[in-house]
Length: 298
Image 1 (cartoon, rainbow, N blue to C red):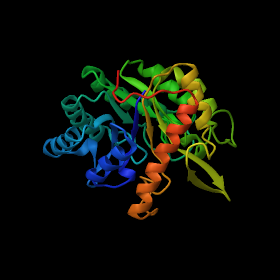
Image 2 (tube, rainbow, N blue to C red):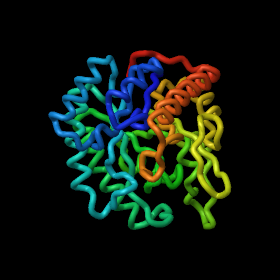
Image 3 (cartoon, rainbow, N blue to C red):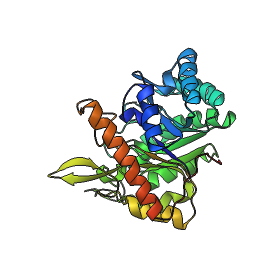
Image 4 (cartoon, helix red, strand yellow):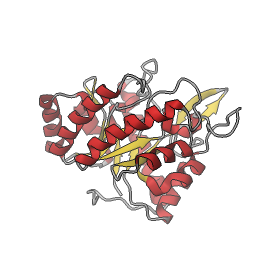
């Protein structure tokens, strides 16, 4: 198992992202935003500069954190942009030897139970995206985020069942279920349980994002791992017990939240939170019996 991180939570500057990973002793990065641009939209020249800098610092890209089919995109009008970004990403992934790219499954304006017309549109778009991945021997990792497929374990499994491709697997985020409703059965919909969700989908999980959160006075607060309702310790134990040798990446959200520019923090606070978060995760993982490698075997 390897450790990685969304180091853009430290800074938009790749030099500082690399410095933080080196401080932790990690050799991997989940590459998402550099200089204000998402990795999927970088030009060939820009990506070559980024890749060169990573190679010079002995950092490998574990996964592309793309914006493909994300929570800001409408399934009815985003496919051409998604396909363009997928093609661009594949070109860069091949250069850098990257296997995984994180995707989502489009914004939802209201709870959307299985069997809706919206579902058919989502599945068809994701099928088109995954076909490109399969043709080029890379793997799309669908995240259980606030998009269609994250509404329940059943939604995630429906995507996998209908698309039925080795190029579509899951990345499970431990913190997302804390703030998301379980859209199954009849309303009112309760909040999801991270451990229950993970148990239902774990056979298809190829990657783990670690963040944690809890509710305080009806407001969501992101926490260090193990201090919220994300069942991080229990999920790590399950990984160890079932010998699930998958990459683990931290996405703290403690100092800054990637998709919420209103949340701000000083450079020092961002730095220290990221380092402390990474070290706390390592302690928890080792306590669960997980051993880490400095080089990937997948």
